[in-house]
Image 1 (cartoon, rainbow, N blue to C red):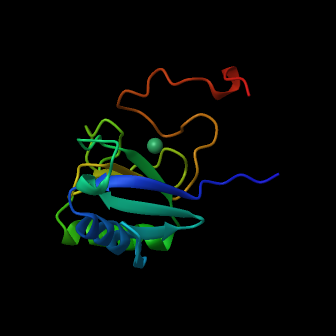
Image 2 (image 1 turned 30 degrees about the horizontal axis):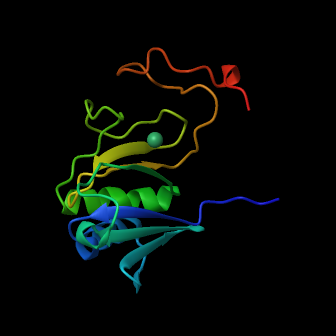
Image 3 (image 1 turned 45 degrees about the horizontal axis):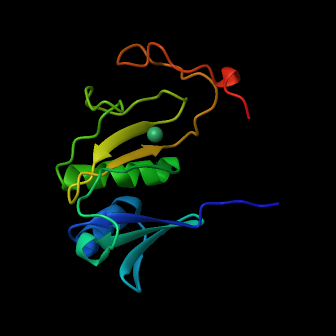
Amino acid sequence: MSVSLNHTIVLSKDKVKAANFLSELLGLETNAWGPFIRVRTGQTDIEFMNIEDSAWNDHITPQHLCFLIDEQAMDVLLEGLRRHDVQPYEDMFYEDPGVNSFYGGRGCYIRDIVDGHLFEFITAPYEGKPANIEKGRWNNPVDPTAVGS
Ligand SMILES: [Fe+2]
């Protein structure tokens, strides 16, 4: 049995600009497919779609997407953020500017400059209890062992 996320649709007021922003940050290509501009990340396509082409929504609700990237891609990302004058944040509440080391690698959160979607980039996957968190609102995290499968 195999399950993976194949694609997700992200609404935008300018799908070309939105896809180009993300693809540049991650050093990836874009391609047009139907009404979408796609950015392929691993096995998952991020399909940007103009809101006026969608039938199920009349406003853009910010989505949270997290990308697991390697250290080299993080370097490319941080340089791209500087180029676009986008502030990375350590925390998901966008209170602490910077890059975190919560899970042993590097991680940061940004707001995408086109639609305000909430992108996260990490070089180490979430596993167990976050480490290196000394501030922010992570003072009462859910115990992963308490969540049933
Ligand atoms: Fe996240």
